[in-house]
Length: 94
Image 1 (tube, rainbow, N blue to C red):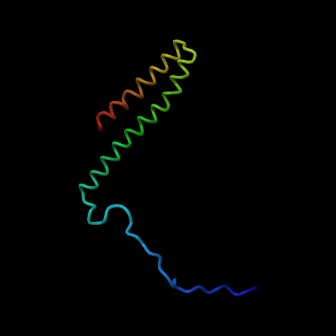
Image 2 (tube, rainbow, N blue to C red):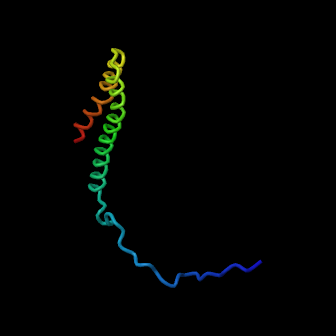
Image 3 (cartoon, rainbow, N blue to C red):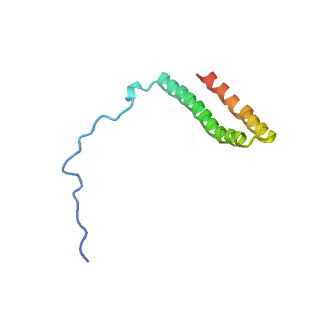
């Protein structure tokens, strides 16, 4: 067997490092954290509404494809129970 190769402890060159993107430590204040949390709440409500609409689209497509009273009632119940509260949450959060 051959002996393991010995590498130097420190590299001979250092890559050029840019300042990392994002806020500096001095910029992270309590108001910045509050703003970030409120932005996250708005984005979360919009994502929930988008997910609800993406789920409701095939449900309504199936109800319209071959309409029966049961399918239309089920699609309406889904919209009333899911989409309308999410829309209210969306409007309330801005």
